Length: 270
Image (cartoon, rainbow, N blue to C red; front, top):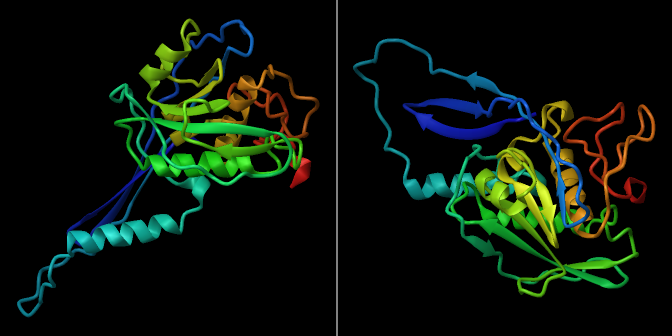
């Protein structure tokens, strides 16, 4: 769907602005080099909506209320964010770069599921817009679902914050993704997996891809499960047949090949 969202209040009129980076051309999908460095590609879209206050002369008897306190505005914004599902939070503007330093999110989650334990750490590049905690919560919710790689008992998963995590999931700006994914040509636009790290392009997390028809939640689920799948040694597959759910290891960012969008590894577990 390729959109990002911002909200501001101006003189009693509210304006909603949705921005997206135009779809780039000429991306080249490099040859797969195994589970240590695998590539995903995608695109975005845009739209605008504006609502204006009624016009008219000011009344001599009109009274003006006190300006809203900044603290009240922040509290209202925080409450509104809590009402948004975890997987749809942090819809921010796209960026080109951040400060290059990576933060491992603090905290250890509960063991989710049953079976042999797989640990994962969540990392966020500093300087990105939005709350890093929202990304960590989304990754934990996705990987802890029985439809993900735990497969309802095949393995259990737990978020940790140590250096010895089995896998790492990093949200990073495009230029950082380019650097970490090299020699693959991610072109500032796509995500990859390198070694035990799933490297998620912030712009894809924010905007998704156009052919998911605005379903950012499904795309985010797919993006995490696909790149984590590469860290677990899984390669790409193709659409098994028109109208079927796309396998999570299909390159759905490039196209659906007649399949339906799907983010889960084992959707039947739901």
